[in-house]
Image 1 (cartoon, rainbow, N blue to C red):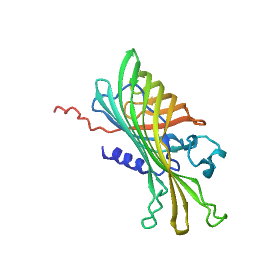
Image 2 (image 1 turned 30 degrees about the horizontal axis):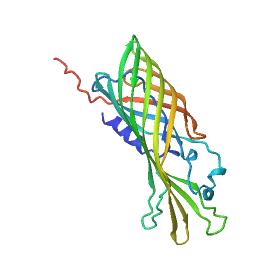
Image 3 (image 1 turned 120 degrees about the horizontal axis):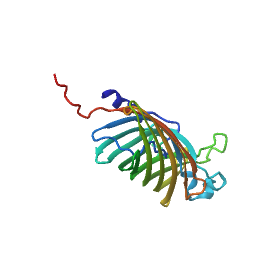
Image 4 (image 1 turned 135 degrees about the vertical axis):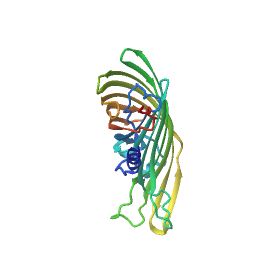
Amino acid sequence: MKAPIYLLLISALLLGACAHLDNSFLRSAEPLAKGDARGIALVSSSYSYASGLNFEPDSTLGLNSRARKADLGFQLPADVDIGLGNGFQIGGQLALALAEDFDRDISFPWPSLTTSLRAYLQYSLPIRDSYWLGFAPGILYHQEVLSIKEKDSLGPIDEPGYLLQQRGIGGEFPLTISRVKHSKDKKISHSLTLRYGIIRVSSKINEYRSIFHYDIIYNQADQIISRYAIIYTWQWGDDLTPIFVDLGIEFSDKKGLVVPVVGIKRLFDLPWKNKPAVME
């Protein structure tokens, strides 16, 4: 029991090169049995939605002249799923990474944390032999600091740099249909997920100069992003340690936010469910 929990903690603290908003799914509609829980090691695609938003002062930042497309990356989050019985399942996902200090506190020079958090409640029901239908509404939280225009070391000594701090909170509403094939020692499933999500983004910009610790903070108007995804998920393996693979696409109402959905995860059983006593 302890080893998988340690794996989760290690995964949560792994520092990915990019830790943007996760867009993977990596589940089927078939729920876990009551009391069953799984810890997960996974790699999931993620992207920054900042390039699709409108910021002021755009003329100062030169955002109008840069390509407005999502910056795709990957992250290594920790994940737990727990079966509740009667077709219900809950789960959560956490990814952490180091980011720049938005306030640039010289007296306490410590980087901030990029945080991506997802939690969901899934309800599933069998619709015919080997088929499941699942609905898994969830909440999302994301916080990140990006360097959107760094100071040019070869330019004028007073040329400013710019940091963007953004916090997003919202929900997602995936509907999944899965076909599950069981055999004596393995399970194979094919799932198709249609997902709608919405996130409200609050942000501000720090225009800074190194001389005299000069900072100007521009508070930005809140913005809303709608997200739409279609995802195919393939599951293979035994009931205890299956492998999931995602392949899909996500797009948004913001210009340029069209990104692939890819991911892979391996489940590790967390057997805290009471096992039947052995009769002697």
